[in-house]
Length: 412
View 1 (cartoon, helix red, strand yellow):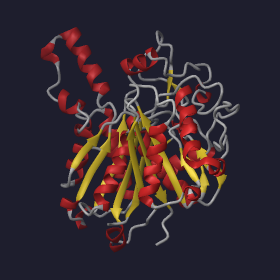
View 2 (cartoon, helix red, strand yellow; view 1 turned 135 degrees about the horizontal axis):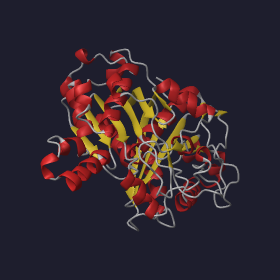
View 3 (cartoon, rainbow, N blue to C red; view 1 turned 180 degrees about the vertical axis):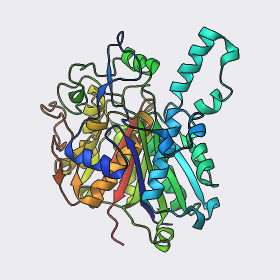
View 4 (cartoon, one colour; view 1 turned 90 degrees about the vertical axis):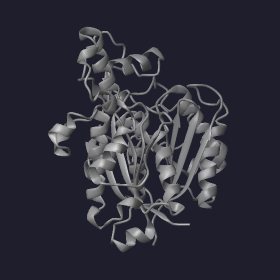
């Protein structure tokens, strides 16, 4: 079996584009939530989201090509370019048939879908764009990455709602571990801050309506939480066989040593009330990594700022770690980035890897009055220094999907 390491990071996030800006915002506890700028929210109960700021697709993509991509694909290409540059990857020296793309996408081209449907309704079928379908379909993000950079290995998406990116990273890890590929571009991308998406989540009563205090709206584990805040962006990582990375002189951020994936088989949106699936996903990751429970120092929680998720993820952690749960630093970076849906696991994996590399745990901001049922150490409001040998990143999705990745400090 091969050892799998992380050698490049490419975040496109509501709190910064690129590794340095993203990490600086995380440890400073900066919120990326504000009023929605893309459409008129006058009739919406939720008027806030975490949009990516100052993103110009032509900084990363030819202008003509960018016009033929939905925003989620633009984010994916930008994140990939950032990750490849960060990893100092010389594409000309790679065996491109042994480089793949495995991306998590939860919804896909919703912005394109809504725009074209409006054309159909108002102007008729003859006005639909000939590139509507290839702009909208979810697999076009990894497909465009493959075409733009010449990667000829397996190229695919994983769609497991909000667990999509974590499952994608886990499946990519297994492909390299088993020797099928040398390098994989993985993570996820999402851009679904659109009228129908916001209306749909609002109808479910899933979104925060703390419109008067946007930066305080995402408050995982806090008693006053009232729903999640939609985010968008991409979190792209370069995974690589250790020997391949060493042979090209790559900087190594960390290592992946375990992955767990389970299903609740319970309800379309609500987690299992005993948190068995989430507990088992973490347990499987530890078993694959052959890591004892008391070795875990940090968990980047799914932590959506919804009542059931936060309570039951806390229960899962306590189920598995028992008394050691109180010794673990936990944080939800969604408190700053909002919930990137299918891209959440990608952006949070980057946060976890950087936390290990730098020995600093990003905070859970707005955690001011913790719920009595959320009684662990959520690293409230301020980043803390701590040496991290092992960390988990969790993602839980509608449909009962649970995924957890176990990261390890790289020691050579």
